[in-house]
Amino acid sequence: MIYAGRTCLPYIRVPIMYRCQVFTMELVYREIRDLAAIYNIQDKGEEVIADLEKREETARAKVAGLDGKVSAVFWFSSAAQSDPYVAGKNGAPGYIMSALGIKNVIETDDEWPTVGWETIAKKNPTVIVAGSMERRRYPMDSLESKMAFLESDPVTRLMESVERGHVFSMDAQAMNPTIRTIEGIETLATAIEKAGLAK
Image (cartoon, rainbow, N blue to C red; front, side):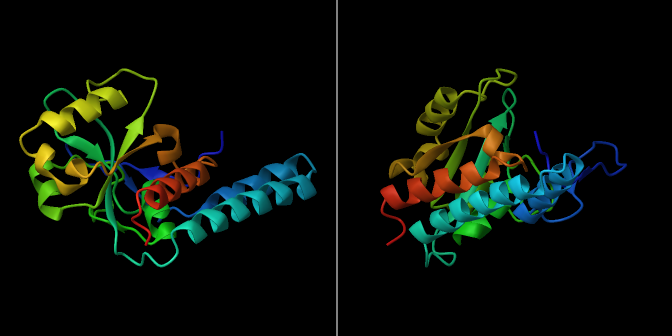
């Protein structure tokens, strides 16, 4: 699987993952071209890139004109009785939001920082994007556990995004900086459109 860009580990007591550079799909396209050149199938590589670009353009068109009117937080998972891992601004979710004109309420270079729900609630995101995954490493890995928490926790259940049903699921693999980031863009664009938030 193509995993674009590098993640750096600063040498501090508790390592925090942050990105050395802002992720864009151009990093993926560069790797596709490199692989295509190695196998001497440059034309096929360009076909793949053209298809991905077209898919992104189509998704963008669904929600054209948002221009920051909608805000979001991407929730990957949570360890037991811990703050949620949410997306910073420089990773794949940051690119997804930027591509669709959505404001990320988490403004940090850390790729997946932990942020308290009280802090997130104060930022009042229009949308919560909840990661759906097969793994069961943390209590909040499953989409079902995420939804149950959001609807029962005294802080999160009062958030507008929860009350209005603006919690959208997304395959957690699409939240990683890979070729599947395009799927993330498509998924969120469709959810925003169906919810009537693009009007």
